[in-house]
Length: 538
Image 1 (cartoon, rainbow, N blue to C red):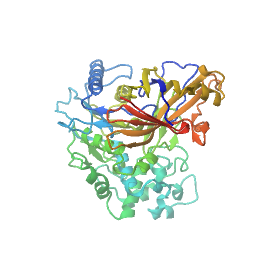
Image 2: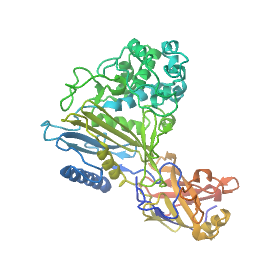
Image 3: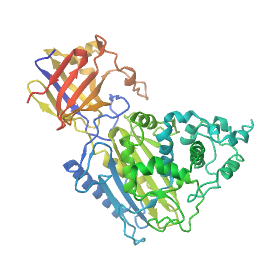
Image 4: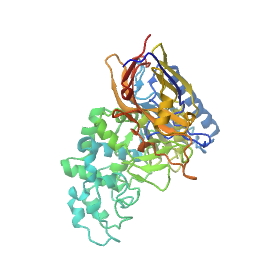
C-alpha cells in the first residue's frame, strides 16, 4: 500500500545528557535507553570543532579561577590529561588519526615537566576494568554465577558455619566479587601493587578475617575481591595474570604505553616514590595514558573484545546504592545522570580511583557511544579529587546530540524543531491517505482529547547498515496521556509496560522503521501496522 501523502511534523529534543530546569505537570516517559540517535563525531564537522573550542575554553576559564559551580580545584599542584572519545560513530581525521576526538592538558606550575597525550600515569582502580574484561573476553557473563571455591578450593575448606567471624566463601561468586557484593574486607594487606600477589598468603590472610556483610547483600568496596578474581583466572588457565592480560587485551589492542606497574615504571610526575605500595595488583597495578585508555574505551563501545550481546549484558547495573543517582556494576560506578528525581535518566558507566598521588576517572555513555578519560597527579600530599572535572566533561558531552534528518518531498515531509529539554522526537502531526492517525491513535488509546495525546519516537539498537553506506533503524513510539494523573509526589513512569498495546492485525502500531541514506537523510519509512512503505522523492 502506497499512500499518496504522509505528513509528519516532529519536534526533536536538542539536549544530550540534559535535565529539565523545572518539573512540569506532564513529563514524557521514555524507555530506558537513548532518547535520540547518537552523535556523529566527524573530524571535519563544525559541531565537533565548536565542541572542542567550547570545551577547552570552559576548562581554561575554570583553571584560571580554580573554582566554579562544580567546586574548587587545585590548579597549582594538580596536573592532568583529559580526552573525549567515541565508538563507531567517530570519523577521525585521516591525516592525523587518534583514538580520541578532543584532548586537554594542564601542567601544574609546581611540577615543571613537559606533558602530552603520551604522558603515562598510574591509573589506580581503573585496573579493575581490565581485570574484568580479561575474564569476560573468554568466559562470558555466564561466569558470574560460579563460586570462587570452584577455583580456590582452599577457601571452602578454611570456612566454618560461624557467620559472625567467617566469610561463607561457597556463597561468594565471581559476580559478587566483581560487583563489590562479596561482603569481604577492603584490602588483604599482603599484596603490593607493583608485583604479583602470592596465592597462599592472600588466601591465608583473607580466611582469617571476618565478613563485613553476607554475600550479595549491599555493595562494599573491595580491592581484595579483584585479586581473588585474578587468582581464579590463574587457577583456571594455569598461567600468570600478567600473561592473561597480555593475551586477552594487550595483544589485540597493542597499546604502546600501557603496562603493569613495576619497580622500574616510568611515570609522569614524581612516580610512586615515597608512596606505600601496599595494594592488590589486580585492582591497582596498571600504568597507562589517555591515548591507550581512549583506544580501550573505543573498543569497549564497538564490541571488539567481546560480542555485542556479552557487552550489553555487562553494561547493566547489578545493584543500587543508598543514593538514587548511583548504582554499581562489574566493576562500574554507574551515575544516573539527571537533575530531578523524576527526570529521564542516562546511565554513565564510570570508574574512578587513586594510587599514591595519582587519580584517574574513566567513563562510558553506551547509549550515545561516547566516553572520556582523565588522568591526574598531585605534587601535594594526596591524590587529587577529579569530580569537578567529570562534571565539566558531562556538561560538554551534553552539547553533542544526534540530529534527526530532515527531508521534504511530495511523498514525505519530516520537519525538526527544538523542543527544549524534553526527550525524543515529538510527533505533532501524522496523516496518511487522508486519515488523521493522531486522532485515530488518541481514540484507540482511550485518551479523552487529541490535545492530551503525547506521541514520541525513540531510537532502538535494532539497526543495520545498508550497502550504500546508509542505515535501517527501528524507532519505538511511546504513547502517553498528558491528562493522566500521577501519584502524589512520586510521578510514575511505566511506558515500558505499555509498548505494543495498540495493534493492527497483530502488528504493533508503535513501531516504525526508518531508512537513512549515506548523507544521513531519511530516504524511507516503513510502518508495518499500516502496511505502508514511504520513499523519499527528490
